[in-house]
Image (cartoon, rainbow, N blue to C red):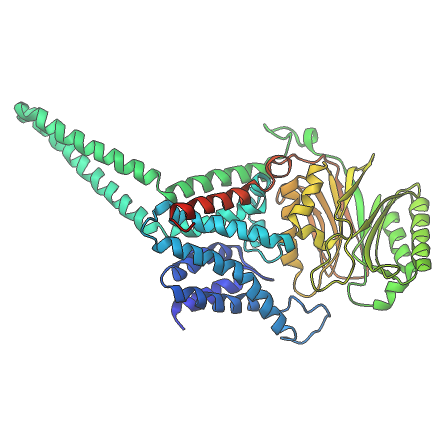
Length: 522
C-alpha cells in the first residue's frame, strides 16, 4: 500500500465518526484530492481505503447495549461506511473528469469539487447529518458560527474549498516568486534610474520607459497574485474568522463596552430528569420513581423539568392514562412545567414527549417525527415542529433526539420564531460527543436556545452563538437529576433560517451544472 493511501486511512479515521478531530477534517480534503486526481484507479482505491477508515471511525456506532463485544456489528458498519463513501467517490470522479479536461481552467479545478460535495451532502442530510465531515469543526467558534449565514452547507462548502485551493499552491507560489523577483528588479532599476539621472541626463527618457514597463508588469503580477484562488480563500477565511469571533465574543446589546448589568438576560432554574439510559430497565415501569425525581427537581428550584427520551414505557391505553394523570398532578402540585417522555406501545408504537403546564393543561403532545433509520421501529409523527407561547419562557418548541440531526426539519423552529427548544434524547456507547458536535449546529443555524436532557450523553444548554456565556454542558448517564440555569432571551434572527434556507446547496448544484456544461459533459 502506498504512503498516500496510508495517510488517507489515518486522516480518514479521524476526519469523521465518533472521535473526529477538526484539524483532520480540514486536512481530509487536500489529502483525498491529491490522490484521486492522479489516476482513475486511485478513485476506486480511495473508496476502498476510506470505507475502511470510516468503518474504523464508526466501529461501535450500533453497539446500543452496554458491553457489546467489539466487532459485533462490523458488517453493518462496513455497509454504512460504503454508502457514505458513495457520496465521496461521485464527487471525486466528477472532479477527475474536469481535472483532465483540456478546457478546464483554475477556477474549474477550484470550484467544481466543493459545489458537487456540498450538494451531495445536502441530499445525504435528508436522512440525518450525523456522519458529515464538517460536524467536528462545530467546536471551532470562528468556523462554526458561519452556519447562521448559510447553514451547515456553507460550512461543507468552505471546508471542501480549502482542499482545492490548497492544491493550487504550486501556481500561487510561482506567481509569488515572480512578484518577489520583479520587485527586486524594480528596486534595482529604481536605484539605477536615480544614479543615471545624476550622471547621464540624456538617457533619462529610455531609462524611465524601461522602468515604467517593469512597474506595469509588477502591478499585473501583484493583481494576479491577489486574485489567485488561494489568496482569495485566505482573505475570505480571515473575514469569516472576524465575523465568527465577533458573534461569539460580543453578545447582543453588549457593544460598546456596556456594563454587564445592562445586557445580561435573566435566568431561570430548569432541570433534567435522566432516565435509566439502558440500565435498570425495570425502572421503566415504575412511574412513581420518576415522579419523585421530578418533585426532587422542583424542590431544588427548577421551574421547568424535562425528562430524557423514553424514560418510561406504556404498554396499554390505561398505562398511558395513568402516567399522564400522575404527571399532571405533579405539575399542578409543584407549580412547574413538566415534560414527560415515554415509549408508547399501544395502540401504535410512538416515541412521545408531552409538555404539561402548572395548571395541568397539556400544551404540547408530540410524536417523534424522525426515528433513527433502521434502529427505531416507532411510527413517525406528522413532521411538524410543535411550539407554544409561555409567559415565563417565551415561545417553546419540543423535539426528540434524532429530530435535531435533521436540519430541514429543525429549520421550522427558526421560521416560527421559537425562543427555546426542548430536546429529550438518548445516546449510547461512544456516540455522545459526536452527536453533540452535530446537533449543536442547529441552535446557531436557527437562532434559538437549546435545552437538552440526554441519557448516556451530554445534557445542558446550548446558545445560538457557539460557546456563549450561558452555555452549560455536563455528562449525564442514568437515573439522576441535574439543575441548569436557562437564559431568558429571544431568538436571534439568522440569514440562513429567516431568508435564504437552501440557497447554498441549490446554488452549488447550479454552478456544477454550468461548469460541466461549459466542459461539454452535457
